[in-house]
Amino acid sequence: MPLSPIRVACAAWLGASLPAQAATLIPATPSDEAPIELSADRLEFEEGTGVLTASGHVVLERQGMRLEAEMLRYERKTGRGDVAGPLRLSGEAFEVEAERATFDLTARVADLYAFRGRWGRRAQFTGMRLRLGENVVELETATGTTCMHADPDLALAARSFRYYPNAQTLNFTATGVALHAFGRELLAMPELNTTLGDRQEPGFDNWIFPAFAFDAYQGFLTATRFDFTFGEGSRGAIPIVFSTGRGLSAGIEHALGVGPGEVVNSAKYETPWATGQGGLRIGNGYQWRGRDGSRYEIAADYRANINEQAVHRLPEASWTLPSHRLGPLSYQSEVRGGYLWEEATNVQATRLRWIAPFQTTIWQPVERYSTWLSGSAFANHYGYTHFWGSQVAWNHRETLPWGLALTQVVETVRVDGQTPYVHDRLIGADRLRLGVDKDWGPRLSTGVATSWSRLFNQGPLIIEELGLATTYRWNCFSLQVTVRPLIWGIDTRFQLLEL
Image 1 (cartoon, rainbow, N blue to C red):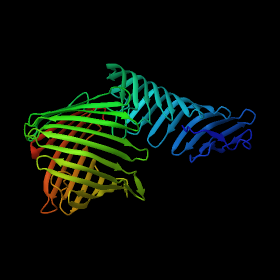
Image 2 (tube, rainbow, N blue to C red):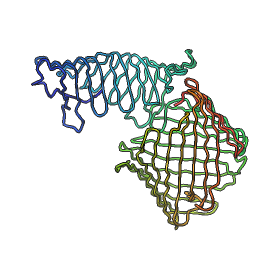
Image 3 (tube, rainbow, N blue to C red):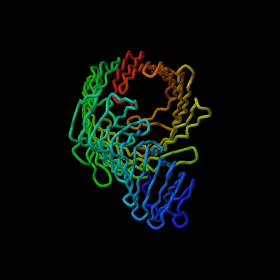
C-alpha cells in the first residue's frame, strides 16, 4: 500500500463518472517520489465532498507495488480511505491477501484485516490485522512461520508481532508468544526480542536442537547456539562446540546499540586437546552501518594461546563503501588499516588492505541455464611487503532431465609478490568444484559435491573434498546426512523450519 501523502490531480475535470479511466495521484509535497497510478472499470468523483470512488477491477501501482481490489473510496480532505476486498497487495518480495483495508495517507499508515501473506521464500503469516507504516510493521493476533508448506508443522503465534525497519539494533518484538507444533502448544513466553536483517534469517536452525557430526579429524562433534537479549538495543549469543578430537570451544558474544551504531564484545575459549593452540580470545569493537549500504568499524582483539604465544591486533579501522552498479556489474570496495604485534616472533607491522568484490548479473540464455561471474581485486601492505592480486570465479548451474541439477564453479586466485606468513596470508590456487543434485520426489533428494585444487597454481589438480548428502523433508523439518569418505566423516544435521 503506497503510504505517501497524495492529492487527486484530476479533481477539477474528473466529472461525476468516468468508466474505464485511469487517474494519476501525485505527491502533495515536492519530492522525488513517484506518483500513484490508479485505474478502475469506473471512477466517480464528488467535487463538493472531495470523495473519489473507484469500482470494478481497481488497480493501484507505485514503484513496483501493486494493489488489486473490488472497490476503493478516498476522502481528499482527510486523506483517509478504505478498500473493499477480497484484495491483493504485492511487491518485489512479498504478497498479501486480505478481506478489506483502510488507510490514512496523512499518517502514512494502512491496515489490512483478515490477512494471509508471504515474504519471498523466507516466511508466511496470517492474522486478524496487519498494519503497514513507515516506522513499524505490526501483525495482530497472528501466526508466522518460515516453513512455506501450506499446512506447517511448526509455527509461532503471538498477540502481536512488531518489526521496526529503521531500527539499527533490536528491531523485532513479539508479545504473548506461543510455539505450536503439530497443533499443540510446546512453549509459551510473555515476550520475545531479537534482531532480523539480511544476514540473519528468522528460524530455529541449530538453535533448539544441536547439530551432530563425526570425522577423522575432529571425532564426534556436537554444536548448538543460544540467543539472548538484555532489553532494547541488546542482542547476544552463546555458541558451544564440543568434539572428542579437539575438545570444547565456547564463547559469548554481545552487541549493544550506542549512538548511530553498536558496541560489540566477544570472548571465546578453546581447549588445546589436539593442536596445543587453544586458549582465550577477546574482541572489542564499535561498528555502524549507513543507509547507503556502507559500513564503518573500529576493532581490536587479543588472543592468548595456552603456550603463552599472544597476538595483539591493536585498533584497526575499516570502511566499506556503498555498493555501486555499472551495467551488469555490481561492486563494493573495502578499505582496512591497522597495526599488528605478535609476541612469539616479535612481529610488529602496519597493515593496509583494499579489496573490491564484484558480481555480474545472472545470465540465463534459456530457462534451464544460469551463469554468473564473481570475484575481487585486492592490494595489501604488510610491514615492508606489498602485494596485489585478484580472485575470479565462474559459476554455472543447469537443470537436467529426470530431476537432476548440475553446478560448476571454476575459481582462480592470482597473487603478485611475496605473501605474508603470519596474518592475512593469501595463497594462490586454482580450484574446480562440481555438484550434482537429484530430487527423487517432494521429500527426498541426494547430492554429490567434489572439489579439486592445485596450490600455488602449480602441478596437477588434486581432489580435496568429496561429499554425498541425502536430505529427507517433512512439512517444516528436514534431516540431512552427509558422508565425506576422504576423511572418514559423517555429518548429521537436523533442521527446523527449513528456509
